[in-house]
Length: 533
Image (cartoon, rainbow, N blue to C red; front, side, top):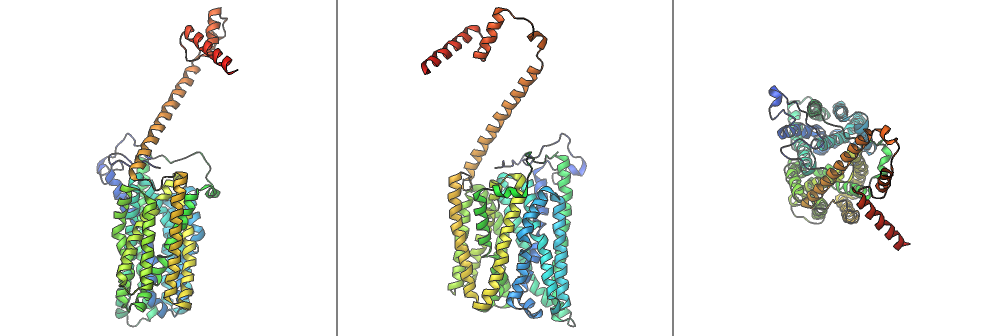
């Protein structure tokens, strides 16, 4: 487990050089030695995925318009989400590995952000050309998926690189908050933008209006790409000024190393995929669900459907601080799973206002994200975190790809009640996995459910142990240097009887300083041997 970062020192893993920046570079906001600079960098980290999150849920925001303007069924519509997830069943894992071992974090961020830009441009252009080019929208979502989740892996890696220990949960929460701000903004402005374009460009066909509206997301993807460029510059400067050392273990990290990931990691991955399979696919079809069961208007259904993201934008940092201060990640994961299960039961079997269920889901979703994702950093070595996060998101996207296909089929065959039953089953599996994770953690002593104070105490003990080992290592090196200065010409000279006797005693009792003590040690040794024999 990593050390917490003190407010007066540099991040863990950074070694401060003796030279301080000068000029405007010495200002607190731009000085890598200063804590304020790290939070300045955090703003760019948070906006790295803003554009991709905005574009990811564009089909949900314009679900009714897409199905009508492009003349597609519910299963064809949900295919837009499946095609995003399918490449990430493999690429997320390889994306994390490429970030770790091939591209590097900085170049990898820009490469994957570029895939998002190109992919959404193809989606928008396909809609602009009309229903006959719906295949182009599907292809664009596939290309968009090549970058979207791997970009999130890079974002997580940046967060772990700049923030560790007690700050990490809060940073993950804030990062999620900004990302979901993009999703919330998308849910609430895309329908007004579509209607505005429709009234402004009356000569346009409906599908052309749809295509023009989708280009808004293309511009925001470019904005996120520019944040990636800024992160390249800031991270490279910090590495130069702080003499940042790349963490190496001397091991050759291979993709097959995932075989040695502990059981707790795989249980955590099961919770991840089952929990999110009950949230994201629901949001994808939620707008039409609210319009059908509760007779909400288009704008009211969009607002209600976005409430999960809206709440997470504000609640995620608070939940992150809560988990930071108290620990007990597994307990919070269990609470969030139960809360989300209750919200789906309310939506499925009651006519209570859906606002209550969606508010519960929003709070639990925020708490789950802040408790779940940082646990990977407690389980996996830091030099394999990119691969670990990639594997988690690969498993998650495999589940989401299947879940969205199942959702489309269930809606067409049996309606939304059976769809809610499917979500409830997913959450029951996640709940069982939470209990298993608690038992595995208790058995192996990983410490995922420890309180923050207990973790701090263990960290202090590990630091003391590391310092003792370092001092012993230093003493050993000094001893070797002393032996290197021995005059071997003296050792090869003939010795008298006293010198030979002292030489013999030095083997019997090497710590004794006087011949009398050597004699006593030898006598005791012989007496013990006789007793044993």
